Length: 250
Image (cartoon, rainbow, N blue to C red; front, side, top):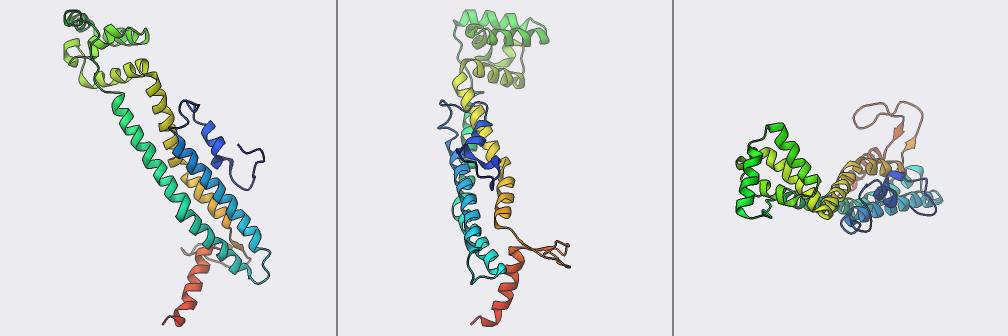
């Protein structure tokens, strides 16, 4: 987080604070979740710039309150559409592609670490166990780091060890999490980063609306959907501006 916290912008969009919510975020995974941090950084910087722009137009004596609001709204739209939103979309797509690719890695087939004869005996032993005992024994072998037993079972068709394919996929995931810990860690970090980007888009849009603001007024004011609001929004001002400009269209 920045040494000086900008209270104008939600801490939920601070890039450093956001990354700290990712349990597996560290030097090993920082580069893989980089797209998320870059997106948060651009969003945070842009929101601060919008707040600065709003403060600046307030000092312009040639602008009405409505004119100042539209100037800030136009600047915000331009900045968000040109920089922030594309970066968030790109980050989500990039991270999701990594998640999908690594999810496949985490359930890929393994090669038996023992001879064909030993592997066959191990599978025959598992097939003779009861269903619950079979699952418990294989899971324990994986936790114990017994790659010979685990790979013998998972490196062959599921039916040879008494498993079904669905359960084999579950156990393959457990196997790779144990024997390919770095990949499992990267996958957890990238998945969390992707979910963070997707989950905080709503916060981002609310912060943009807050930074731009509205004109608070008294009286019966209605929004574009006919609901009483007590304020005038940039969208309403644009609609009125566009309507007033129609007679001047050549």
